[in-house]
Image 1 (cartoon, rainbow, N blue to C red):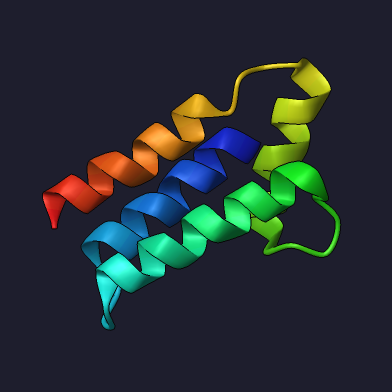
Image 2: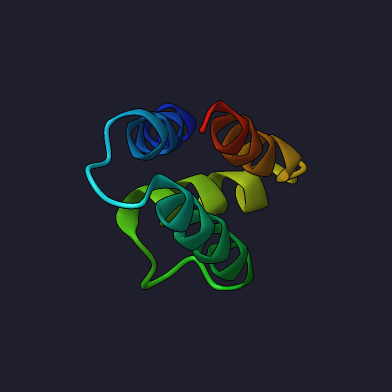
Length: 74
């Protein structure tokens, strides 16, 4: 569920955000990097995805790949 929520957030920022979508994706990348260092206190969907990555010992690359894919769509 954590990864699904994160994916939906990325998709919404890339497809439906009313403001500067590239700036929103930049914010999300920075928030994701920060959450991987300290998940607590981050945006809830980002923190949950970061906690899942850390708990599973999984590489975080797919989180950033999804952001990059949405950047390319812009």
